[in-house]
Image (cartoon, rainbow, N blue to C red; front, side, top):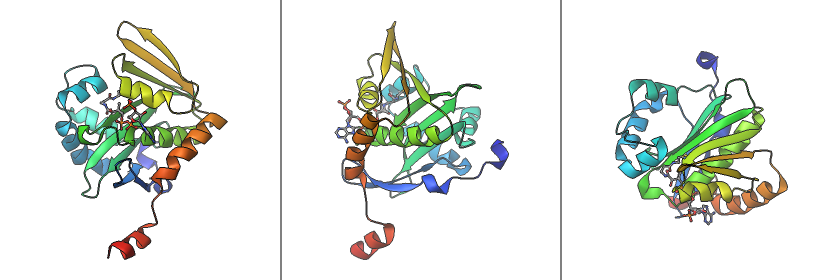
Length: 204
Ligand SMILES: CC(C)(COP(=O)(O)OP(=O)(O)OC[C@H]1O[C@@H](n2cnc3c(N)ncnc32)[C@H](O)[C@@H]1OP(=O)(O)O)[C@@H](O)C(=O)NCCC(=O)NCCS
């Protein structure tokens, strides 16, 4: 299935981040391997620790392959790239074998954390997953990771958290209920950018 998966160009879009910069969000591609390795090497050890729950300075070849080879249905990752084509954030879901649940994970470049990128990734992942028959997201995060927890709590979904010995299991149904739609509409109002040709005319 993975070998034949068509690249979903309809999921690509330009978005304004909270700092005003315009970034490009798109599904990950197989040729993102070098960009992903460079991105990981730029992360602070604390961000890596929060993402991988330990010391993990480099990604193995197997990890790079697994992270960049997705089928866009049961496994999907979005990347956010900047104007220099540098990867600045990754968010992914992986369906939990044969169920309608998927586990999600995120990591954002330290320099651009708190610019709304984690929230953007979650918004687009939930909508893409829902269209693929996934009904619930699950995440595991460290209890100290207030940024991650705030992203989930502010999402508009009815989020449940179970704290256990320093970690938190977060779960929520991703059906686009009115509270999510309202929160999303507010977020999207600040994200919208003019179509690329109009931007080019104005900048040129
Ligand atoms: C956790 C992480 C993914 C969050 O990504 P982010 O891009 O920094 O998140 P956002 O900018 O969307 O949200 C961060 C903050 O902005 C706030 N925010 C987001 N969108 C907003 C908006 N439209 N208006 C106002 N505030 C907003 C959030 O509530 C959150 O508040 P906080 O700083 O009080 O916690 C990121 O910090 C990271 O990569 N950390 C290291 C790795 C990690 O922890 N991964 C998670 C493992 S599961």
